[in-house]
Every structure is written in C-alpha cells, then in structure tokens.
Length: 234
Image (tube, rainbow, N blue to C red; front, side, top):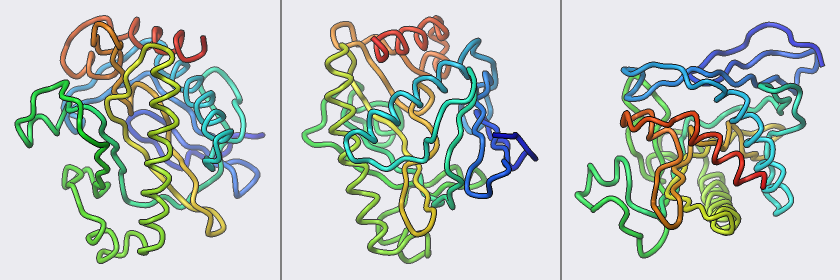
C-alpha cells in the first residue's frame, strides 16, 4: 500500500492518504504532550510500542465482536486502517477514580467505583474538551440518538472485554479513552488503544504503567510502556 499525501498530523500520530480512498496509513510518533499541549517531550520507542499494542488489542476486540478500523500492521510504527468519518466525541470509561475524576469530585485516587462510569467529551482542544451529556451530543448534531446508544453499548462491551483480559495479566484497567467513526454508515472503533489513551496499574503494587508517568514526572516512562507491551503480548 503506497503512502501518499499527509492528511492530518496530531499530537501522537500522522495520517496519510493511500491509493485506496477507503484506507489510510496511521503512523505513530514518539512525541508526547500533556496538559492540552502545555507539556511536551519525547518517549523513546513509544510509537513502535503503541502501534504493536493497538494492532494486537484491535485484533483481540474484533475476535469478541467489536468492529475496529484496523486492517493490518505495515511497519514498526504504522498500520493500515479504514478511513473513518470521526465523531467529534471522546468516550471515556472509568473503573477506578483517577485523573480528572479525582480533581472534579474530590474522590480519593484509587477508589474502585461501584459501577463503571461512561462519559462523553466534546473533542475540541480550543475549549479543552468539555464534558457533555448524551443529550448534548444529540442536540449539537454530533451523533443521532441511535448512534449514541450504539457507541455507548460498544464502549461498555470493550470495557468488559479489556478489563478481563488485562486482569489476567496482573493489570488494572483504571480508565481509558475511545474514539469512534463511520464508514458506509457502519460504526467502527478508531484511534488507538495504548498507555497514551489508557491508565494501567499493576494489580498488586498499583504502580502506574502509562502516560501518567510522563504527566506527573514520575520517571521510568519508557520502561513502563515496555512493561505493558511485555505483559499484553505475553
């Protein structure tokens, strides 16, 4: 598959057109940002790790009936994916209190929630991605009521599947972000699944093994990403 014009460059990935209008190449970068881009840096080897993790987990989810944009891995840092019309919605699933939930609600970090919490956020960096309700998403024309229902169902199923898979590898899935899009009126899971978009903690020690090590200057960022890859791939 030939790489053509650069279509989009984000904080963690570049998207390239191909000779097939329905497919694009997603190339993962080593660059890292936090705090709406206020903090910038590089995590050596991150692109290759996130590409490999995402490819593996997309395949795993597909085996459990979740449709994803992933087609095949092309290189250490790139994969071929379906070209989706992305929803301007970030979907967050929370199992354990961390991050913004702790700051907003005063809940102690590490508190196991009585049930998973599903949150929608408007994907808009200029507004700092504000939280929205299902009704906002429908009223703003971001998705139809049927699409909101299907996206929510997918997110909850993904949570169940990944929590179980990761727990068997001595990892807690604290929370994670998902992005969805459509092609030919079919909803697919897009973006990536990695320590950039998920919070992973060790089951016993509660050691953070994700991008929080970069956000919070905890050190050992590269080794944490490598540890996740090692555990997930076995």
